[in-house]
Length: 286
Image (cartoon, rainbow, N blue to C red; front, side):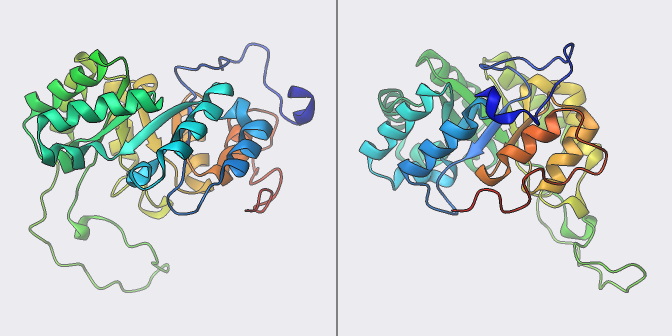
């Protein structure tokens, strides 16, 4: 495989481990915004599998896809050393009660999933209950990945389409709940103490757009939880480049399948200061 990517080069002493990796993880978004057939997944894994660590069935898409497809996709991913995550769907199962969640964990295990993601904000449950669910996932032999979101008043977030020197109509302050970042980090720390493997930080209000990125929040989260235990979504190439330049190749990122090659290039060296895309923005069209 390496013979096909001679333009990709790392320093001999670079601290980037081979798969399975604990850091420098690249998790790929699975079916949601676009349909990824088994043929497309096979092509991705065969051409870029060494750069993909995880596949995530985001947004509950796994609940709408036939179980036969899910099992085949998971088996294909495992053949290429790629773990598979459920995405944030478990919170919907909790509406049916704790026993339904336990059944859900068992079903995920039977299908071959490796990781169950818990959206801590949508769960709206006491912290101790969240920790109990983390332990339940771990006792089932799966990896637990709680996801946390930081919420701000819209008036505190810079506008996206703001021209230099232009007047921007101020956003009225809302009564929307504003998350205490220190409290959020403490909850995440307790989840890690309970056995959680990774903490996912939701992109909304933190790193969804490069123009309104909250570098202070990201620095605080990584400073307290550690770069190995955190994962951030990089919704476009600008954000991925910012994360790599700021925190190096060992930062864990969740990206679209179309960003895999560019992201791996960014993790490497000898690419030049102004690298944007080695293969252009349309190197892998579906």
